Every structure is written in structure tokens, then in C-alpha cells.
Image (cartoon, rainbow, N blue to C red; front, side):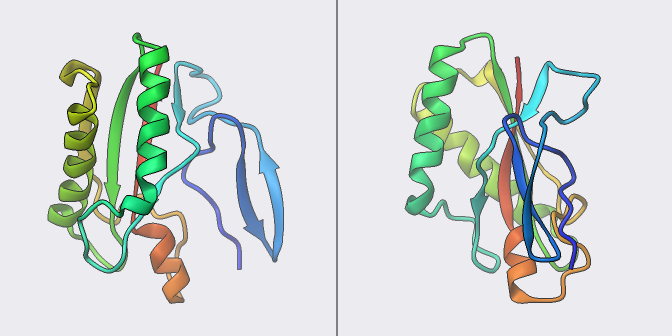
Length: 143
């Protein structure tokens, strides 16, 4: 099975090709170095929209990065697996948005949107693991 990401990450992205991990260089679009995908994302169980506190370290690290770089903005992207559900993906992104606001990141620096199942990391989804990979929130940082 080949797992191909929609976008590459800032530092590197590990993905599986026939069971082997490979590193790729990073940016969303090699011609545009002003945007990158944050190297961590948050996973969800089923149709849950709650932030799993096991992922709190990701959000705290993101807050630290944003405090160090006040010129950066973040677009929070919610995703689902197994068919369209803009409502769930939007709720996931909005809850992360509200968390970042609570921790002092200014509203003008944040945006969010639910992308339903339009940006899968794994396609087609053949296993529960594939579905888990696609149920996520990720972050596009603009510098």
C-alpha cells in the first residue's frame, strides 16, 4: 500500500511506501515558502469532535511557536474519513481554534475550516488504520 500525503511538511514528512519510511523535503508548494504544514496533527476516534488531552503537547508547542513568531498566522483544517461530513470537520477545527484563543493567540492570527473528506492522507481507505489517519486536524502556518 502506498500512503501519499496531500502536502509535504516543513521539516520533513515520513510516509510509508511498501513498508519503508522515507523522508521528503517540505513545503505545501515548493514555489511558495511563505506557507508550511505544521509537522504534527491531532487524531480523532470515530465522529468525536473533542480534543484528546493526549494531544495537548501539540497545541502547547504550537502556542510556543506562535508566541516566538508574532508575524505568523495559522489556518486550522478539520478532516474526517469515510464520506463527507463538513459539520464534524468544522467542529473539530473550531474547538482547536477556541483552545488557541484561550491560550492567548489573537483572533486575527487564526482561521479555521472543515474540509470534510476532501483531503485524505490515505486513499482509498481500506482499514481502520487508514480511517484513523484521515480523521484529524492539521495546521497550515503562514509566515
